[in-house]
Image (cartoon, rainbow, N blue to C red; front, side):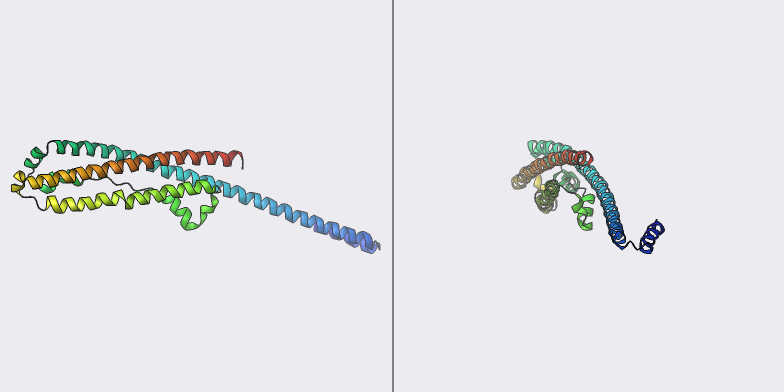
Length: 235
């Protein structure tokens, strides 16, 4: 092809058709520029297509992480509900419960039983650490996703931390200080009742927080799926 164009230029020069040679040269430059522009356009389209594929992949993986969170929330909430029922039974029959304590560490174990949520953050952490978060073009969706994970961290440092501290206090005040005489000690009974009341308060708060996050995760999954559909049909 290059030889063909070169031959044409040489023929024009040899025939003394300098004006036509200039016009032809300009035309050839224009063709080259157009070719470059087309190549750049094709390359940009390919890059855009690849980015869209990556965006869909990351969004799909985010729904997988969030789905895992939803299932874990549901499992913990079910266990928390059973724990609340058990603590209420102990509270109702507190005197009998204390009398049946033989091995404090084992018999009082129910008072420090806890279930802790840990978010599946593999995808969002990868997006942030690699700088690929910009692949997600919806700023509103990104902010909602980040807000969800911020709230899970707040719950971890809030109600979950309070339950951990409460466990330590129960161990120190009830487990380690338990002696057979505590069976008839009204003060010990009242302390135990207070701890059960406070623990019920904490677990109920945890249950509320987890349920709110579960609903938020489910809503996010729907919003992400809507974004994926938009990418596939509109962009």
